Length: 253
Length: 357
Image (cartoon, rainbow over all chains, first blue to last red; front, side):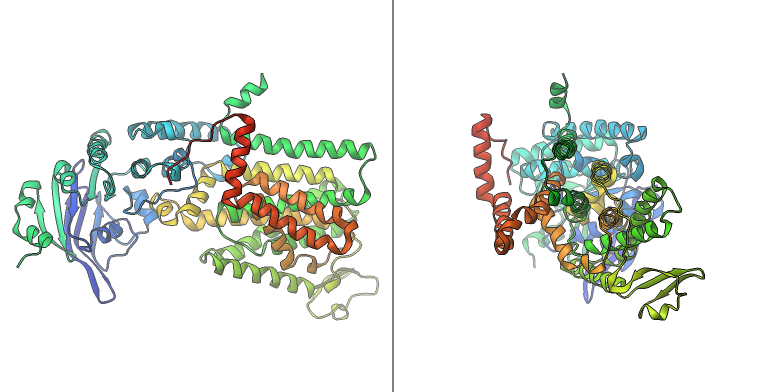
């Protein structure tokens, strides 16, 4: 059984059909790319997968469970985590706390355990700190754990967002333009990180990206959207030579 | 060595300990000074209100600084807490020993304020920004006017309640008025002391600081910083917003009881819009999100008008100027940078590593 099965997914905002008839299958442990020209509806797909938008048609099945139209909170618990195109960190909180917030539903204790500092508090905070530090280490953010998230340079903020998403222990990780604004070196480094995250955590990753070297370099399968419809699907080579894709990007006919 | 241990502690733990130390040192200094007979009568009269305002400022800071929502109705929660607690205190009167009645009065005040926190919070927390501020402002005024119109009496037939006037209660002549409309509750047996006040301030500090540095507090601050991201990591927005808001209301209720039991009479008009704004001024001046700042601002600004009493008419003018100066000193980017340079020169420490914006 596939990890994620999207069938006939569509959403209309008033008269505007932003996405329609999208079918997508994601297998465990694979790396997928979602590309397309600006305004093709890529982020809208992410927003439907994570419950920010309620699809007007179609189904989303995660691991055999129907999560169509569930709240973002429920979908996070079901096992989808994401990053945002325009970085959304908890800016006034420390880097460490950003990751610990990500573990909100992974390591739990109640309000009174926290207020009365019961033994469980110490134990669970300790476990949280341990896991958070090891996550930060993967992204080379361990040295900045006590800084405010807003004090990090741009590239590291992007990494912290990924670390926070991983802290929710997802089955599927959605990355919305992870390499945006990065220089070639940072992009290369990020590619290594994304690959190693997939290998270490064994999770599936679906990413939106405009940097074709990045997408072609790491994605095993690529779906191309244009005007809210899937126009191509396949591996990097097939996509690169697909006339429809070339037409969508360069303007054909 | 205790000092070297202090250095190795986590930054937040150390900062919290300093806050506790400030409160305890303040208590000891005041006790020593009043023991030596140096303190003036008017200053001693200010001690319990200082504690009450410190609690109010800390609890409002939870809503404003940590939940990130502007509430202009904090005096409303103080008011319902004060009236329910003091009412219980007067009803129990001499029939129950003090060490039972007094904690009970505080608990009832806190619980009632908390219930109002839920009632107000459930609809209001769907709003944000200006809208939330306006609704909480309305809540404060509504509470004041309702209590102003309340008449409650007790006689051998039991409790009598009316919203029109005292005569419509239809009480026996030997009945006792509990709440007399705009005259409020009178003949209160004063029970608040500075020691009780400080103990309550410490409890407030422990509960709120521990909450902030826990899973719950992180969820609340995450919502403040970015609701969409908070939701995306699986945080239930309504639940944590309500938790912070209600907790803020409960401590306002405790503070209300403390305040109410410091005077022989209690009127609802004391807890009006101006009081809410005054508490907000403490929070803003002390620094939004800074608990220690709230404590210091609340204490200083409660004492200041009394200290300036000798200047008569110029008193409020100077108070206003102090507010403006402190605001500039705390918030203006140039002044903040200047302060950092001065501190750096004295401590010989280099500027903190500057982050990239």
